[in-house]
Length: 374
Image (tube, rainbow, N blue to C red):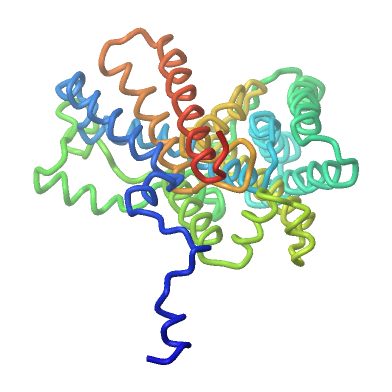
């Protein structure tokens, strides 16, 4: 055997072997997976016969989870890039109000109102990112300012224009609109009719809808949530841009020295977060047919909590879109599950706080495993 062959057969002492168990422990989705299993197990034992897992019950908590999921995807990518956006909730209320004002007050076609609203809100997201980059201020402070600015405009505009804080009539204006159907419609209606005819799902027994399936389709809100999760996961794990996101949040200076356009990455992530918030708001406006000044309250914190539960580190550079989606699923299941289980609804916040604390402790342990800190 030659010297070169002998050298190649000797393990490099600089390469540390990691056991499969340890590899599983440092997966960012671990917390979300464990939490999901525990939550479903708990409600299967306590609320199985309550209707929670009937077709209507599943639709209820799936819809609520999808709401959290949409904004959690944007928050997740931004947090991995090392930044926060506390204006998400206010952006939801602001964008929804813009759609209503453009549609009802200014009598624009709904499709035009939606497109212009997206342009304005994504531009505000870009402004958030530019201010953070140019001033060097923490994104926490900049977006906290925009939280108040956008919420103030959301209250001021309808009061000034319509003398009220809720603008209705959007559902009637959206009838037959091609773009509105992508946010407020349902798909696979024929499939659910077939399932009802086959006796696989329940139907209405009385009233004008007797014989019709209780669930008549999958809301576009759920479709948007799944599309954004798949898109975010592919971008983060299968593209060079995804590597840039991790690098920008892990060590921005080292990333810049390696040729990563850190500033552009962060600004794009602020824009994507604003886009996700506007998707949520548009679906909400199309569902309720109205916009209210109080829409989106506390959603920014719920998005961040879902991301943290899903395994992202608050320090950036580590996380998973799938984990964030699982965190959002936990949100929806717990919120609806407590109702089905007959538990006082106010305990939802208590349960949420316990999950958040456990997730942060777990994430801290994982970070120490990764970095070797004590």
